Image 1: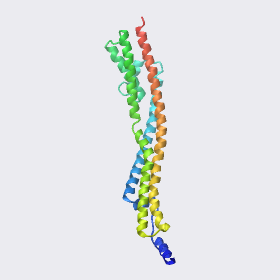
Image 2 (image 1 turned 45 degrees about the vertical axis):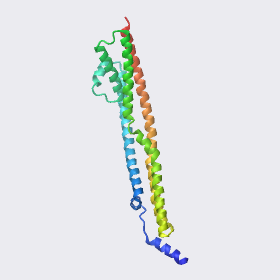
Image 3 (image 1 turned 45 degrees about the horizontal axis):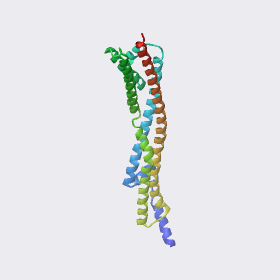
Image 4 (image 1 turned 120 degrees about the vertical axis):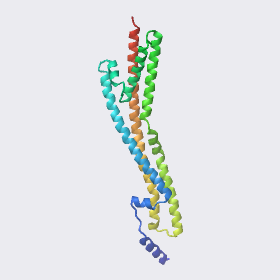
Length: 244
């Protein structure tokens, strides 16, 4: 019995394992390696989406502030429309341009002469602004479903890699008929590495999704408020045309 224990200790001491991250990856099973590669790719793409969204939202808020300053400055809306008609730089400008384009199209055709035509024009302007707002928000929310998917599924993908790695580790231990800690530890470490990497991918995705969802919600409310205010302005102008 004593000789077997000595032999086990001698065997454990003669085998060296690279416990670094790269070493754990190289020693992992092919299935675990695929899981790790998927999680690494998801983590990099998650950070890319987060940085792109944060920078874009900051830029759009700056555009919105400059546009609102020009819009509420008291200048001519027709001049502002002529200035940004071809290249609206942000969703708020796009909403404004779409409404003004519908207004000019109806005015050029003489479509605001009667009360019924003015009511119809007001409805079309409201509809056009809502369609433009929805389209712009759809563009801004692109890739958000990816963040939600990574945040919810990455821990389970990592857990799958861990379970698979532990199964293989136990199989190898049984085949070697050696249960010393030096033999068991590397296989368990390789398996647990998949769970750790799953959490590394999931945590930023969840935090980024919650932060960006809040920012997008506030920006959408800002666009809806502008569309409502601009719709009221257009309605007053239609009423003024109706007045004798």
